[in-house]
Picture: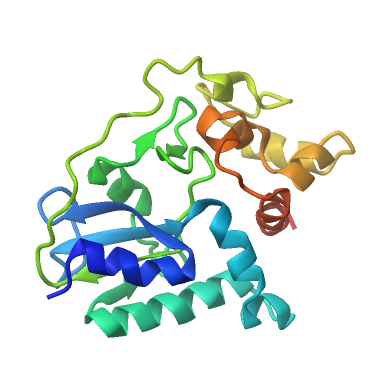
Length: 215
């Protein structure tokens, strides 16, 4: 049976990391799954790896989701696990709840998820569901504890704060000339997180995600 170290070693060539793990009992999991591992891009390594992939360059829709499906399906087959995705399922899988149940990922002051390595740039490419129990790390420390919370006031139009998220106001701002900074550099709220600033994320990666969020 594969252990967590072996799984992490298999993820490394794909520039993916285990962002958190959930054991049955900590949260409802899909049938047959005793341990679920949440997979996320591994910092600055991910973007050059993905942009060298055939999916990125073939001009077809949803290149990142197709890359994720190819890579994570293969990993699931190698480990005898289930591949589970934050896209393509109806109703969608509860990745937010799973993340909080992992004890490694936390709700930020603006309620978006924050990770000790990725900050507010955290995203999930998928998950691996195992039919056996794996040894998981103990819960970590919330990185927002003691933080001056620059995320709360970072949105130029106040669309996202600790009071909630005004999605129409966000999209309206991104349509304006003033909103092109967010379109080209990524969401100002995500970028304001001190961990996000230290993560080494390429602006091109943020622009890619913004084009998919706000076509």
